Image 1 (cartoon, one colour):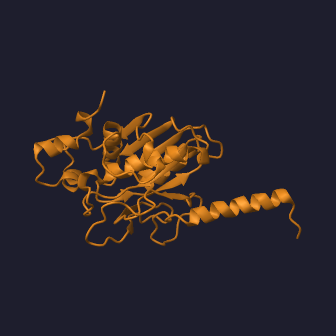
Image 2: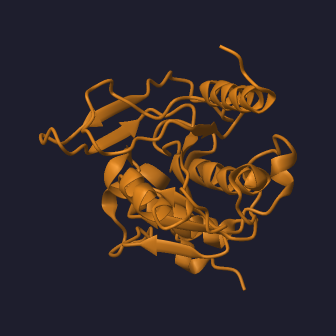
Image 3: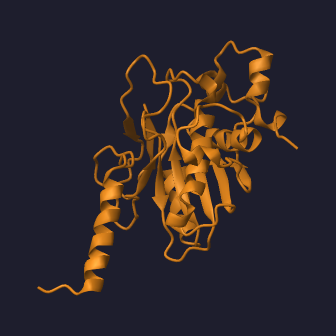
Amino acid sequence: MNLDRRALLVTSAVAAMASGAMGQTPPPTNGGDLPAGLPQPTETIDLWPAGAPGMPAAALTETVNERSTDPQLTDRAVFGITRPRMAVFRPVRSNGAAVLITPGGGYRWVVVDKEGYEMGRWLSGRGYTVFVLFYRLPGEGWAAGPDVVLQDTQRAMRLIRHRANDYGVDPERVAAVGFSAGGHACADLAARFAATVYKPADKADQLSARPLLAAPIYPVISMSAPHAHPGSREKLVGANADSVLERAHSPHLNIPA
């Protein structure tokens, strides 16, 4: 078979894209069968090329639990994340805007489907380029403690802007959306986008982590009784956190001008 120059260029470009995608950590999976007709992301972006900072002393194993008993509906949750990454949902026709999604899970795990992939499909179907973030969990021994999630959300926003041309999006038009504990992560990013919580890794970290807009949806917000969600509070700041630590991680009290 003869290939003309244009076909060869297209083939080479596709191969290069596939090679780049294969170089990233695949999306979380438990290896089980998936329902037909529900698109699953294959493209991911690792947040930390040299490894996530502050690795726990005790080794973690990434684990995906399937909580659904319906063979036509997945309800997965992942914990033990050591390679935080974004799963990408590209629209057929981009509207030029991007959305970073932080699913919930009470900071015990990160929900994959209900507050992640389902919203990724819905938004990408409306022209948005969507990045579903699988962030590290604060109760798993990371050196940054309660700031480990903010490390990942800041880095994710900066990477989206750094790679905006690759996705055909305006780097100024990047929103953050989060649910439940992921709503806390979203709100904390809106409040503390400029906080220095990690050492710069590359040129991406010269960019702003401030979202254009933030939508914390049924979020965990306060870390103080009686309003705090007990499980999320314990995982984030610990059962014996004092009022200073509680306030530092209650995003509604830290929104800048």
